[in-house]
Amino acid sequence: MAADLSAAEGVDRLAAAARQFGANVLINNAGIGGFGLLEEQGWGEVERILTTNLAVPVRLTQALLPSLRAQPAAVVVNIGSAFGSIPFAGFAAYSAAKAGLRAFSQGLRRELADTGVRIVHVAPRAIDTALNSRAVRQLNAELGNASDAPEAVAGVVIAAIEDECAERVVGQPERLFAWLNGCAPALVDRGLRGKLSTIKRHAGDRTIAAAGLSQS
Image 1: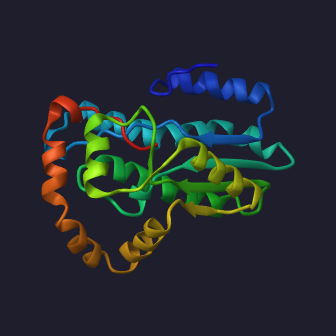
Image 2: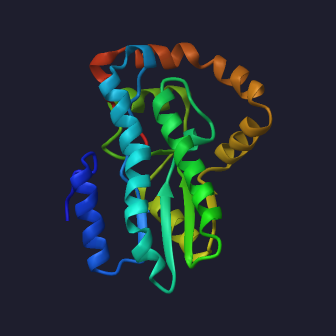
């Protein structure tokens, strides 16, 4: 079924359908990117980024928790982003939402530790989809950022579910930088400083960057 997850009624419809069919797996995959400099983004765009990437998964998970707990075993998979652990210039609001989703996953996992509901958080890097704006594709190409096919990311998600993995970051460099950003963020600040002019150049072209949809 199709539902507008930006509206409360759409979330409620989807939750009702999932309860009706006795779903025991919830994958929170809906998301938008919004590449651009924060001071040049309208509040409506920022709010949409935060709502779709963070508030909607929290609301949908909350709505389905009673029925998920009624199953012998259940899994909630939250699709985050490497930017949730390595916040990136040009993606301030998006990074904030994905960092919040990661924290939500960890907190809820600890809250449900005595139940049959597992919480899995998967953090992909860039994904090759038509949702990427031209500005994002050009930025990734110029910076040499690696990207993955959707099928490859789907395989990681399935493996994380089957292996009972709690956290999975896609990409070896991304795992290293996520760890480094947690331990020594100043080093990452200095490393990314050299990319800032390139990011601003691509983000500043609002004809191709405005409301640009990027990662999952």
